[in-house]
Length: 406
Figure 1 (spheres, rainbow, N blue to C red):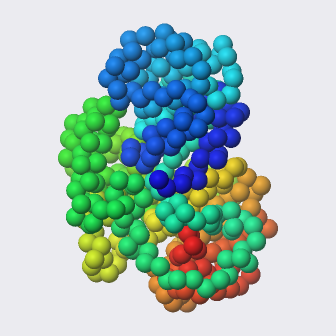
Figure 2: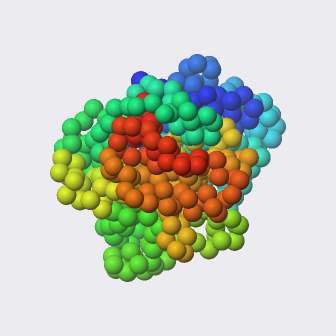
Figure 3: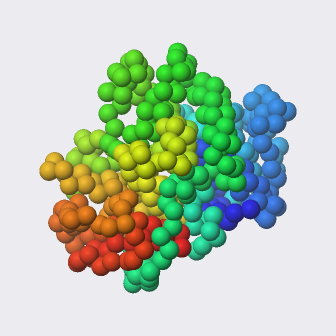
């Protein structure tokens, strides 16, 4: 079993809050982690994937919750949404920390009655596919290091095959599979998501077009996306495409990176960047031939950027407080792939270069961000395919990709 570095934060949440809701896409390891915690903390465990448990939870939610007794794990709670209203009633009567650890593969709509029931009563944590540091059983958290003293990062390292790692991704069931078996697993996974989860959330008029939209989002991963234009290309109405996009976000398949700007109004009016949650899934959806990936340079660059963003987002989620995440783009064309903003206001910019030699003006985007943020700019980093850490100027450096996990 691989270590999950979200676990300490999850344990702290259970120590102070009556309800902790662990979310994440299907098959990322929520059940494994929840069962582990249940065993260590003496919590009863129930899963709504069990038909008998599901029927009991749906037929009498209040009676089900009141009969649970002590601390309890309820897995896949989204299958009986009214259960959360019953949890609210139980928690209002007894706010003992750690009473409920809930897991769910579908995010709650923030405006729904069910979501409102947990306001002020629950902490929400998101478990993502395995990070490379977890796979290597390394204690490296590059995000924490970048907001601290980066001198420890200035060590030569192995080149590391980023594309091999990216093509595998971090879904636990595929890590030991060859490429053909991996594709077969992802094919079944995506079919189940659309036929079971997506259709449980809304009426899907054209399942094949919903899948085509997901493929289109994967092909344009890590770019500011125009979903209306993509909808037109697929023969979908723009409102339908935006609804599907929102549902994929609720299923934790894509993550939205807002545009960073010096004020909130500018952030809200600029297009977000959409990033697929896993590069193994992205490689499958785009039909990327990982053995001959160099022939698809544009897609390869987006895959590398997505891989780095996904890894840093995972590492950021292990920290408390958690840095906010953005992308940066000016009207003049300067870009930074990922911007991390610490709760104290400090900003770190990260660029991804899939090359062993840095091009001229490689730091242009980071310099623009530094000028825009002034004293808030703490550090700018380029992650690249070389083996040598390089100082690049005032508060700027380049690091090999293995700095993410080595």
